[in-house]
Image (cartoon, rainbow, N blue to C red; front, side, top):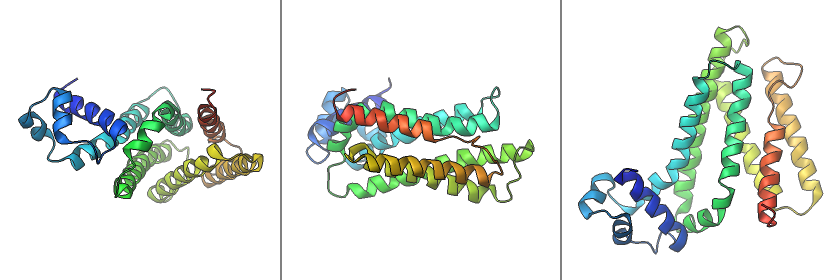
Length: 223
């Protein structure tokens, strides 16, 4: 681990333990085993290191997307399904970090970094979907006239699904889960029909429900 990553990891642990506002740059420098010069060589401020800490999530996704796009053994349909599956799996892996993240983001003005995080997620995910749609067009699998618009729409649908999943994770009424399942079925229909498929070749329901159930188990102490 190089110094920059060590500083980011140390800052994350301190932010998650004490909160951003109560953590000082001096504490980060000391616990990371860095000098002031070493710290300020990589980061200009605590706000900058906070952004780097939270954007690690995006960096991990970008690397996963790159692996998907380089996969020559799967069809475009399989790769499209794999994108959603990898997002779901990553979110499952992060469930244990929720208590830390709750503390980390409990600072004044947190909406700014959260909005930027959402914007970056939308940007990189749209780019991944766009490349797969263009690949499908080239291979004659699709006939998408405006792949850039569809990629953007598709990403917003994915974000909507995960935003709605938060309500289901904490809901006690079974009706909420039932409505969520209907939403997933509707979204699958929408995505498949847009691509001209009469059956559900594009699948999101199973992966989304697995994420929700994993999160609910964790909340109930069953994880």
